[in-house]
Image 1 (cartoon, rainbow, N blue to C red):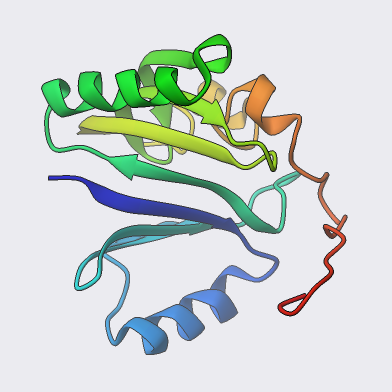
Image 2 (image 1 turned 180 degrees about the horizontal axis):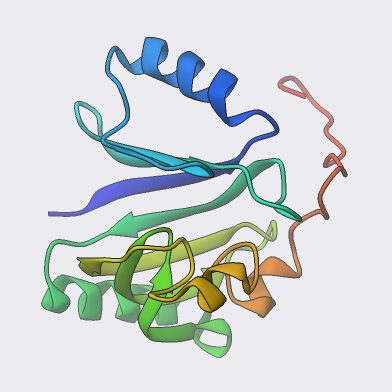
Length: 162
């Protein structure tokens, strides 16, 4: 079964943890100095926030988490059907305190979509060693990250919900 995933970059991790813990009615299932994650069943969502240097503040990316490698293979086919030229594969990716197989695609609005199957937990945000942890701010591939506003920039909004 798939689980919807949302990752948001935040300016103040502690304030955001308080907000989302109250909003969801529960504390995060994972809490680190730069990251927190809620694995909720109602609604079925993997909701993560992080505060890291150079990270985009706001929606970083959306995604779908699968329970099995077979589900991930099916999801990759759907990503390819959406935009076969832009699918980026990341097997054995170290990111967000987890080792995962991943696929990425960017929608027409520039929003990065991640499909992933978590294989194991890791000690650091970006890897298994302290050196890996210092490299980079997030795990979004360059093609998807290029569509995101830089840290401190806000996307221009218009219309009813802006």
